[in-house]
Length: 472
Ligand SMILES: *[C@@H]1O[C@H](CO)[C@@H](O)[C@H](O)[C@H]1NC(C)=O
Ligand SMILES: *[C@@H]1O[C@H](CO)[C@@H](O)[C@H](O)[C@H]1NC(C)=O
Ligand SMILES: *[C@@H]1O[C@H](CO)[C@@H](O)[C@H](O)[C@H]1NC(C)=O
Ligand SMILES: *[C@@H]1O[C@H](CO)[C@@H](O)[C@H](O)[C@H]1NC(C)=O
Ligand SMILES: *[C@@H]1O[C@H](CO)[C@@H](O)[C@H](O)[C@H]1NC(C)=O
Ligand SMILES: *[C@@H]1O[C@H](CO)[C@@H](O)[C@H](O)[C@H]1NC(C)=O
Ligand SMILES: *[C@@H]1O[C@H](CO)[C@@H](O)[C@H](O)[C@H]1NC(C)=O
Image 1 (spheres, rainbow, N blue to C red):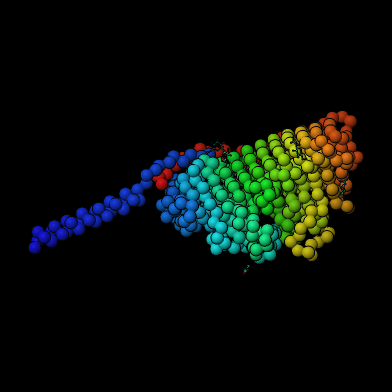
Image 2: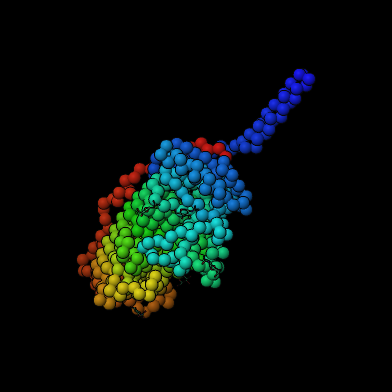
């Protein structure tokens, strides 16, 4: 009896051991990766892979819960050195998820995050206070795929891993007017500071791609952003009521503006009163046949000030640095500087529009006139151009202090006769060919339009090399 019992116990133990062993084998990490990146915040003390939280990278299983579980778990380290979440190689289908502070989301080069096309995977969130309602729909808005609010020190990066918004179903629903809320953006970070978004390929967003709003101290670099050139509202990067922002080395192909600088809409934006200021944009490459390389507006009611754009290249794009505004917008666009721009195949090199339609409410304030002032363009080369300029100010609200120097424009085979069409604008030009309109007289003595020599605070931020060993 005793021996038998002993054997049974031993057999039982062996069984248990075997179970434990096989469990640990099935859960064993077969891969280890040394994740290295240059980060804006502090390097992270903790790390984990999405697979530790039940993530399945088969392109079919929903990972919405896995992302939530992972980030909820890692948020406990926010005050203990921060954490990094690795998205390993694979195709990770997910709905909207929320970020946390002192956090890095890192996409392996062979990781593809696929946005779910199931509306129930996308919670509705409050409309933006500076917009008054969802931008295209009266019924509020969907949360973005990757959303963060009231955060500090967040990095979204990778070795050029991909986020695929799978936007086509959203575009179709939008065109067929089947949505009662505004389409989700790909990445939206709100009321936050110290944000870095870098080294990723972003494709086919349902709507705008990258939307930092009411935030500051932002670096966006080395992004490849791609959407079909006829896709609706697929703006590349939209800094919106943000300060101290750097956007550099991005390549953007879009159905809308490559970069659109914003600050709220009509009365809502005026009341909210939060400008976009201290924005540097460098080494941008853009393709957007129906929109601007860089748009300022049309939602600019909280003001746009101190934008510095340089080394800008665009191919087959409707316009360069365009101002869009309207009566009712209020606010201002002032102290804008752009230099060293090269354009090939463009409809309007210089375009300012004072009668941009679209209002959140029909009862906008007709006395809310925008102030457009001190707009400077230096060193512009453009080939195969249809119109050199169309500059439409607002009657009784002249766009003032426009300066254009050293612009060399070559026209298409059949150029329009009126190359410079100017109304309600005032300024000067130097060394501009073809010659500008009478409202922008050429100065006899050649000069360069100004460009600030000082640095923005964001230029002084030192990026650190961070590395973590992560198993998955
Ligand atoms: C993310 O946070 C927002 C605001 O707190 C909330 O409304 C939304 O439901 C959250 N999204 C998810 C997926 O939990
Ligand atoms: C986020 O910050 C804004 C602005 O400071 C504040 O109004 C809001 O209540 C904060 N939200 C949360 C969830 O803390
Ligand atoms: C990000 O891109 C830059 C430029 O290509 C490169 O030097 C850097 O190594 C990249 N970082 C990562 C983490 O891949
Ligand atoms: C990142 O991937 C995109 C898309 O495949 C590619 O066009 C781009 O050149 C890549 N960038 C880098 C730095 O490797
Ligand atoms: C959205 O619109 C659909 C179809 O028009 C309707 O059935 C549904 O109830 C609406 N949902 C909300 C939240 O308004
Ligand atoms: C010049 O621009 C026109 C559009 O105005 C376009 O059809 C044509 O292909 C362009 N030519 C070249 C050489 O890029
Ligand atoms: C010039 O611009 C005005 C608007 O300010 C427009 O009405 C007019 O048609 C334009 N003229 C030409 C020839 O394009």
